[in-house]
Length: 277
Image 1 (cartoon, rainbow, N blue to C red):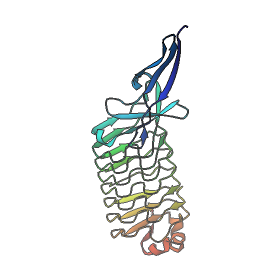
Image 2: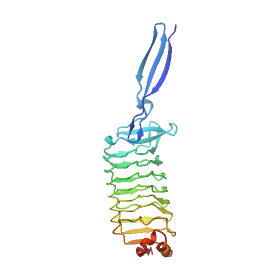
Image 3: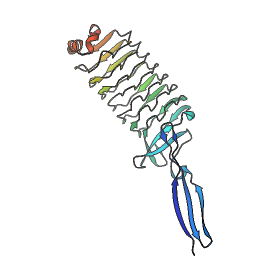
Image 4: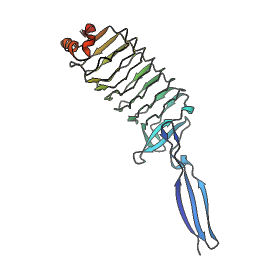
């Protein structure tokens, strides 16, 4: 009887690390029958030959969106110094940093993100205490909640121009953050977004912001001046500036001073609300 050969592909189990599912290698099992009986042989295919897995920097890649795109993350033990994310790997575009993708990468000091990345997940860089500065491609419109929570060494961030909101806990505990430009397209600032940013001295809130969350700027002990550019007072509660012992001026459009001084939440700060002009 002639030999018959069957190829059976059995994917190895995904390895979970740093919030990322590493693309697995595939084991090829050769099953056959012949006149002498049956048997099998196997060999492990290299993931890098058929599927992208990791690069020399220790970045890990995983298929998303129907295996047409890649997300990228890093095991915290591999994080060291400056890291550059490539725009593509093995012919696939890198478009996403997943939830917790670089969480607790304390050895990471700088990260370059390519224009191909359009999405950043929740707590993506949380706990990266060594990260000192970060900028994003303009095409990113959404960054997940808590993306920079606990990044105590982060002193500057260049947020993407197309960003539409700042999430809950976004910069909470970023004690070295001294300045930040909030893009004009942002319409809301989440709960605890800047809570504990003790080095933040001034902030300007764009005219399109209609909501600022609970304790969003609480614990910002160095904050002296806040400019709120909306003519209509954004929705807040009285805990917005809890613990901001240095705050001495909230600047608003000149025609809106009385509206702010009488609005819910803002009226608690009526004695330090002044016209911008």
